[in-house]
Length: 478
Ligand SMILES: *Cc1c(COP(=O)(O)O)cnc(C)c1O
Image 1 (cartoon, rainbow, N blue to C red):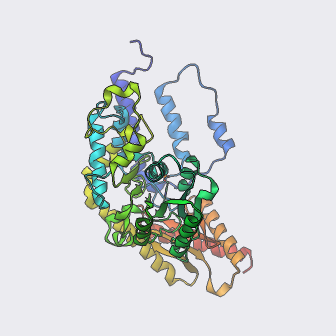
Image 2: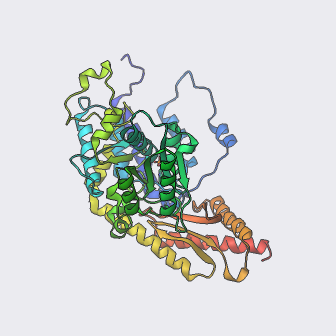
């Protein structure tokens, strides 16, 4: 045996089974753990900081160390009381599918290297294309590491298709509620500040159409070249969906690329209510969807869908001499020609296996449940004279603040109070519940895309907030 990395069959089995047991334990016992962990750099350093060891240690010993120190020092993003950012309510089938993909180390770049991997990516992308009413024959897409990479891939493509080589005059439009990854992508692409128009949203946090029209008209008069609008189908802050149909009309009239960032929200297409909210999504040129959010997949899987797959191949195909032998014919897609990565992990497998196992029905049920749960949460909050809804339940996100009617608190006091409520909840580790800023107010935000979250989890958390609020007001002698 020459390779220093080999284990005996028995060693591999016992090690592997042990890990499966740890994961199964996590899935079955998650609710009894606290969703939040907190550790400083010093604390982490004191556990982990060391030189790379020259000599190895027994596999079991390393695994035990990791089980005791690494796993508990990470928030549980699939915990039913993990309400912040966009939670990651993963599923066991997909977690195991990822282990298979990694275990076999399947290269998902070129057709001849792994025809089945490419085929499963084509098949699952077709499922998504159909879901969003994109044309399956001409349409296409690619799985990425996440929504950030999908947005970047979209904007590279949009710029190439609309501007070709010269983008010195090109202007791109987005709202102040668009996700920060779009700004990052624009930075990566090297646009100058005056080529990016971030427009303030209206009172409902939607793209303000009049401002947009004025800006486009002004830019054209100045000899600039408007080329792209980025809309949000579910802003991360409030779940708000921009007026997609109206924006699509503007894009058609002005010959602009229409990109929709539906990283978290687009999955709501699978529910009746969500699909009404998302009306017009099918008119995008490109659409970002993040299966590792509301499609219940483990990290990382994001996705970009486009109306015409040749837009991607026309943007990303390079023909270096060392890839000559694996080019193949056109129907046999090499996904390295559709995006930025050459070597790619087999992301389609988990999506494929979980949808085959549970059926779309399960996904529809879970997403519908989530949207209803947020509506019920809004009802509960509206019944109380202590809570104020700042942004109503939309695509399972709701924003609210503690504002007791009888206390007459100033805006500044309300900001401090709500910030402090969130801090105390997080410090208690019972729930992951953080704030955001809406219209200059500090508000508490809940994103309820976890099908394991029940109304009881929410009521318990609101009760905790209530108790902390009263405690704080008492400290303030209010
Ligand atoms: C989460 C999110 C992103 C970024 O996606 P990642 O998978 O975190 O890279 C982009 N846009 C929106 C609207 C999001 O909610």
